[in-house]
Amino acid sequence: MLGLELTPEHPVSELVELGTQAEREGYDSCFVSCHYNNRDPFAVLARLAAETDEIRLGPGVANPYEMHPVTLAAKVATVAEASDGRGLLGIGPGDPSTLRNLGLEDQRGLRSVLEAFKVAQDLWDGKRVTHDGTFEATDAGLNFDVPGEIPVYVGGEGPHMCRMAGKHADGLLFNGSHPDDLAWAREQVDIGREDRPDSRGEFTLAAYASVSISADETAAREAARPPVAFITAGAAPPVLDRHGLDADLANDISEHISAGEFSEAFGLVTPEMIDAFSMAGTPDDVADQMAAVLDHADGIVVGSPVGPDLEEAISLAARAFTESQA
Image (tube, rainbow, N blue to C red; front, top):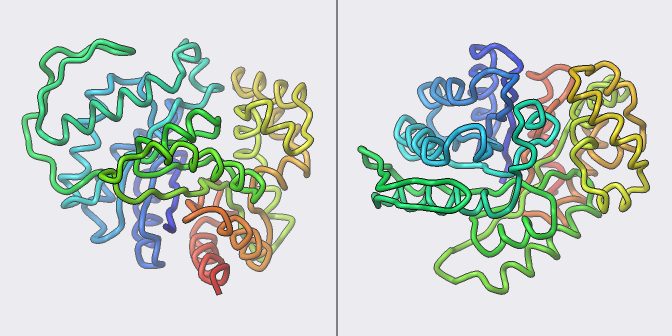
């Protein structure tokens, strides 16, 4: 898998141009990120469905709290229909720093993610659903047929979420960019796959990596600061410990993000955080980092910021991915 994350912090027309470029460059999937303070990902996906021919499209990573899971399932099914069967779903527990602004942080959990995509799969299969769990639905169904199979990728990084994905989902979008993290993720996924029915088919472990690539190494590393700040803010204590990062400093970054003090948050990011939570540097640097991650993962989703120059970086990252497998 070679995927691309598009973040709707940019106008929709620009994102559509970048998505069509990604298809030309050989990316096989495109995830549009989901945060309430950015543009609507489904508006972007609708435009991409009309302007592309082969690349798979879906939200990444949606959560089951900001909208009812049945509504989320219908939106993803609409993307699948509009794209002639190229839909996919990235779903996870959401970013705690932004969900905190909506009073939803305490609702995050594994069970809600699992229930949401299991119900979605039933709806896509044409079933009517009655559900009473982390959410309620009574005799809910879709009034249209859903083309093709919609793969479900769980976004997460905790051990239980990784194992659940290995057992129940089509793949895991592991929020990591470092080979040590992907090696650990593979161990967790393999535990879950021990109980995976053969009928579920193949499984893809993808590094949902923060990538920042440029011929200018300094510019690439500076551009990585914002996404690394968000990743650090949401990192679990064992992840911080694995990389020797200061938990108190990570908490300070999280509090600044929740308060909308982004410059302050980004300024607290250290070089060690950039090394731990991104693939940042020149094309040769990134190709080497990708190769190390692919020793443990089945693919890479090139995530924010991609690089200081988005159009150039999409091309450079695709070439780095090819070189990483040489």
